Image (cartoon, rainbow, N blue to C red; front, side, top):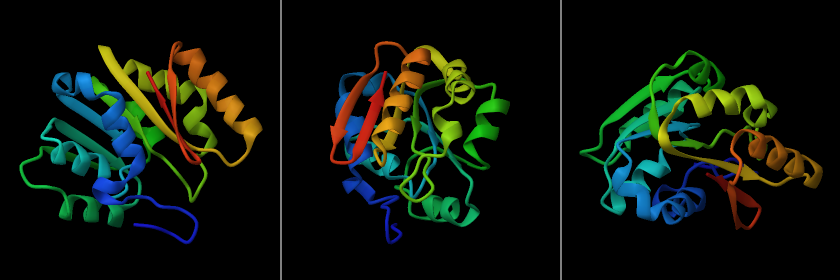
Amino acid sequence: MATRDALYSDGTAYLPARELYRHFNADLPLFENVLVLGTGLASIVHVFAEKGYKPHFTLVEADKQILKWAMEFAPEGIQLDPVCTDAASYVESCNRKFDLIFIDVFNGRFVPPFVFGEPFLSGCKKLLEPNGHIAMNYMVNEWHEWLLVQRMFARVFPGFEVVERGENRLLAC
């Protein structure tokens, strides 16, 4: 799924999902519950299924039609919990815990500012299991904003790593 200036999902070829898989490969067997904030067409579900991993996924997507398509085209045999709401509302109201959280929220090529704000990131941290992992997909459009994103992410998740793939960055901890 794409717009004229952004690629939102590309099945098993979606680079951010593939990088997430590569980065956390050794821990994947430990992931039982995965939260995806900004589902698109659920490329992460396709990548994990292709590699033989089938945790329970909670898919949060604000666009009802996109979420419907994600469910319609999802691989069989995967436990999916679709939630049609925006990521900020979900994080604020959720009381579950997750082994992995993947933040992939975009408006076109831009990550909305709330996503790299401390309140949202701290809310995500509260949703992680004690040994849980988090990753955020970010596309660099403006260098000064990218530096701000890194500072904010580091405040909540010290010791994170950046995986670069073209304009995309995967912040992982």
